[in-house]
Length: 417
Image (cartoon, rainbow, N blue to C red; front, side, top):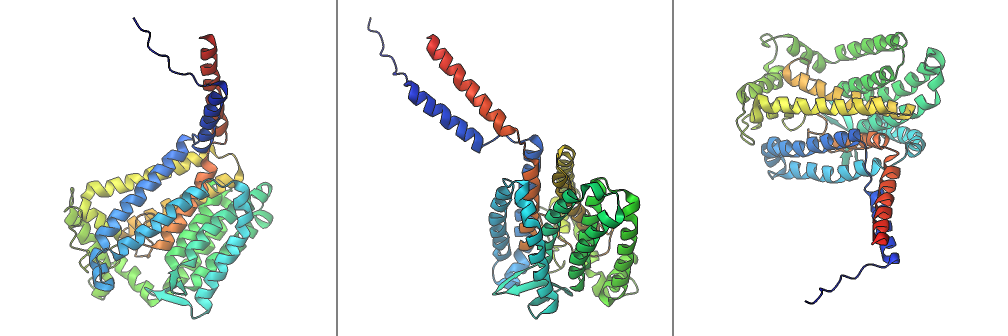
């Protein structure tokens, strides 16, 4: 009986080359921590879900204003197409890169915001001068200031870690620089963004362990400024009055329009919703249906179940941030994670609270879900910074060791045969 031919065995040099290639691939596709993948997966799911809801909620207004049902959704998709790679690239950068970038980023973003409030390049939208138009490109420098503040705060806390218990030498310099950056946004009248930025600054300091008694005076001062600025604007006072009156019976119906139709949309959705794409509120009944009030469209089309799922996703995002914060090993990692946690989750709570009638209309979008290119790009970049500190620094070493061990075991088996 003929003996079947044996398969040629690879020579030692070939086996070594294959093993080396596997080790190099292992270093490229390194095994990160579970917290890393939880944060990344939740973020990507929210972005994809947001694209679907922007397509549904913006189709009518997009056709009326821009001549096509998919113009706004396509634009948002392009921002996501750029934003996700930016997030992934940012996740590979070391802390030293972000620390070197902190001051230049803060200076440049504040200079751009100064152009908004001090030159004719500023664009007013919805009563707030918060947009900058340069060469046909329109964006929000205030969103860039958010990211810059996150990175800058991580740098300063790292340098002043030993002085954070001293208000004069530790906390006051942070408040002066951070407050000046927030003040530039306040000059444009965007009180909602200012509130988020102030909460981000104070909340990050509190979460990294700064004593509450040191933060109480600036918090009280910030609340006082907030009340004064809100009371100084007639349009803001009308919105506050509309919020305080349950049925808006004694003021202009236009001031109650958005609040009431947001509630109508939620009520129309019921438990299971009217179906994706079947919203009636988006037919020019609900202003900012694809932006500030997109949660109302979610509640109408996907019902109570869909709304709970969205809230659950943000809870999962908060858990992911909290896990990264707990396992952070450096002051920079703790600070940037705490700041982005307060920013993204806090802004989501405010946006959803406005739609549910818990807060007056503040004009802040739902992070990762609402339409808005600058907001999406900067939020993804900020999460990329958190991903960069959430990476497991020992994962590559362990992966390489496992690959080398497997290669040695295979070589020993071949030698034995």
